[in-house]
Image (cartoon, rainbow, N blue to C red; front, side, top):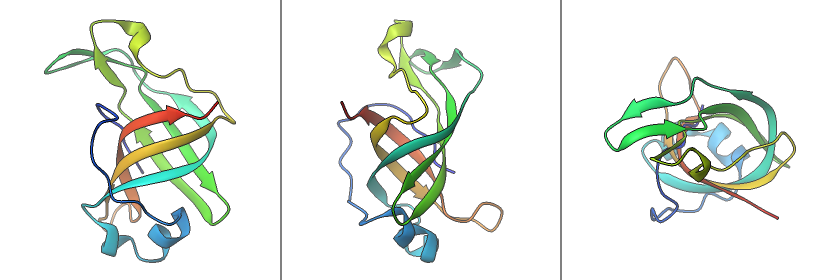
Length: 120
């Protein structure tokens, strides 16, 4: 699972594709990656919720799919005083996701997303 928090300005290390992460998620643990793919199975999460900077809007759970595989993602939303500051996601959107990969025995091959850019 990937969760996305914060700004798109975070420096990230590119991952060739989702399949590489799925083959050996422990090698990517703690690494910031850039993933490109298509949103599938989009579900809205509870929003807004409080954070250090105010309120976070747009929490969502989704699957990111590319030609090499699919990875569950959690987007924690964008923290802002303006509810329209978060990206409005739609199933089928082509996106670039900036994320930190998290590997553990309960949810191998997951990551926390830092930001989303919707490709137009």
